[in-house]
Amino acid sequence: MSKKILIFSSGTESSVQAEKTLREKLDKEGFKIVKEIDDDVELIVCIGGDGTFLQAVHKFDFPKVPFLGINTGHLGFFQEIMPKEIEGFIINYSKGKYRLQHMQAVHGTVTRGKKEESFTGLNEILVKSNANSTIHLDISIGGGFIEKFSGDGILISTPAGSTAYNYSLGGSIVDPRLSLLQITPIAPMNTIAYRSFTSSILLPPDLSLGVVPDQDWQKGGIKIAFDGFSKEYDSIDKIEIKLSDKIVDLVRFETYDFWDKVKSKFL
Image (tube, rainbow, N blue to C red; front, side, top):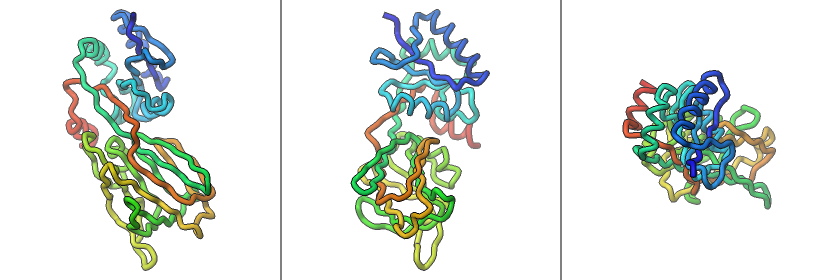
């Protein structure tokens, strides 16, 4: 029985060319290329940039099937190889010369009266005003009140997302082998009424973050964004955010080193 590989591509010119090359070489090695995921698919190859990779993760609903990324985008932090390395990837993959990097997602639950709605992000969850104005939030950790936040919003990122929006906000880069959540304030203010942390907070995996928007303020609405997707609400009673039980696996080869990649992408 042929080994099944699913290809997900951004559709750009460079991605189309890389996909053509990949299909030809996989076919020669006896792999079966499919368009839909099923229990027999052993690998999802994502061709594009980081945005394409996140689209694939959500399209297939955080599958248990591992991903391999071919970078035809810009930063390509999730993507493991370049198009010129396709042949080497197939050889190493066929010989089992790789390991899996486990990335834990973040889960959020919005409560509105008796209704609850959940969402999951691999990189992060963002809470901000829908009207692009200052937002006021009561923040608790593990059920205990911490601060009355005032500012543009808060970003809750996983280690996988620490090098994305979180990094541009001045948050810390986190080694993906750690299990934690990072809460980074966006333009926080310190006034008599609101005393906000001005740096990131790191939470261990067993603690959740509680967010209660100021009920008198919510006329402008609230936006919840995750991995480039977003939802808007007229009002929210509370939000609970914690590490998810969903894991995304990335194929990494012997030459991969997280901190070497950080250095090559940012320095």
